[in-house]
Length: 96
Image 1 (cartoon, rainbow, N blue to C red):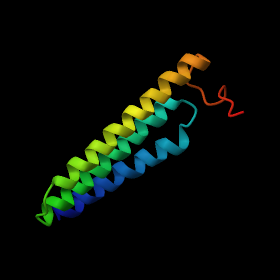
Image 2: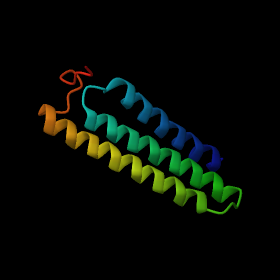
Image 3: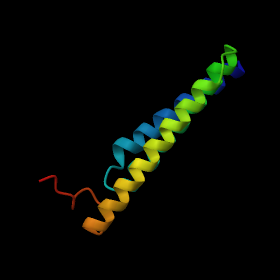
Image 4: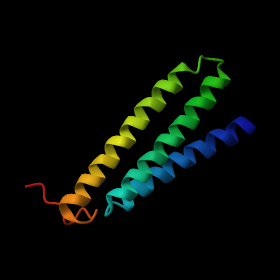
């Protein structure tokens, strides 16, 4: 019974992160924070399943390395966007 509750909590975390990503897309910082929340929920799901099947946790370290690289890339894009446009609104960002 506790296993099902933990899985439901992790899936709820993932769904909430996706809802924030879809609904709050005006600011780049909010989008980046919701992406990091989604990555955290996926990490919790992977850790829970790897521990239950008694698998090596090396893949979690690889996943964390890629998530840190994704976060650093997002922050660098945020800083360059604030320097060029003055804010992080997507409305003021013109692709042309």
